[in-house]
Length: 236
Ligand SMILES: O=P(O)(O)O[C@H]1O[C@H](CO)[C@@H](O)[C@H]1O
Ligand SMILES: O=c1cc[nH]c(=O)[nH]1
Image (cartoon, rainbow, N blue to C red; front, side, top):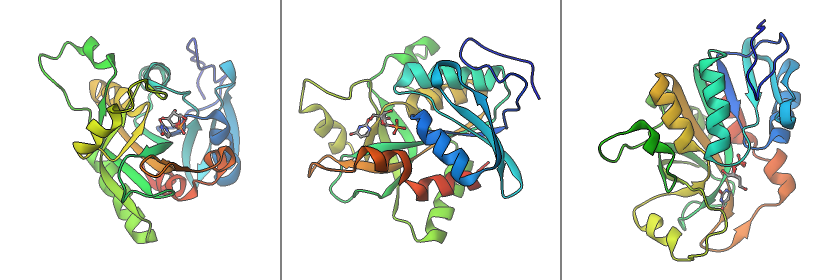
């Protein structure tokens, strides 16, 4: 139990676990809690950014929405780490594949998160710091994906501030540098985790195949991405 609260998270006495899954969509957090957790208790309703704690295979685990974009995940992850003592932060999101061979519904595990955001400048690093995921979590996630026979690609992703880009040449430049897919949060999460000395990972399901224009439905984005969720629930 905790009597702590922050401007954005008010658990009202409910526990937050050391390991948390972080989907962008709060309704995906609700779906994960109600589908997979035993005895799920809601620990946050502030701004409808739903968070739950329950047990999965006997181990306490939490899940909470982060909203979209680096500013949003950064404030939630900062509060989770620094006020509530969370140590393993695992983003579970949708992403847009930039590569022909990374198909719809494939899993992408982020080794690193390149970014066009200015968020990292606050750390005053005299060069270009590469936001990386936790190798411990990464290795375990890939092992679990292989065990399940899932198609899982490990590599660099792009955390972009821009969903609708006025310049249609931009993504191609990242793709030519081998970046697998685009999403909008992980670089901020990885930076906050590194600065605090805790572990973070991003696991994604490809919702959009940008080279072909094929995409999944909004309902599938909320509930159909079960392989990545089942991998993430085993981590910690
Ligand atoms: O499915 P989520 O986790 O929200 O992630 C992706 O989807 C949103 C854009 O539609 C952005 O948040 C992006 O990172
Ligand atoms: O194309 C996409 C798909 C999901 N999320 C993104 O940020 N971009």
